[in-house]
Image (cartoon, rainbow, N blue to C red; front, top):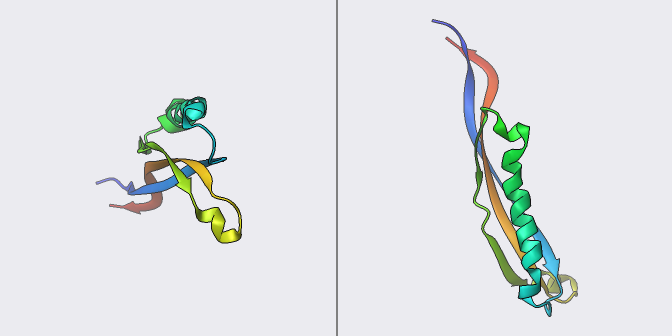
Length: 98
């Protein structure tokens, strides 16, 4: 029986946030939403994505909400566009087994 590298599956999550003046008309943000979606979708087109170790990339539903967190620092609230994402990889550990 030959030796093979041990593969461990890991999922990493993150988000992208873009902040706007809360008085901004959400309809005016459609070009930004489309650009963010295209950038995330475009990740699948780069050569690094097209390797055997990449299992999945997705989960990026774009959402808008009034973000009141800046008020904690004495700043006015902002309108925020959020896009969550998940990246699942099969990582070869370099550890071999027989």
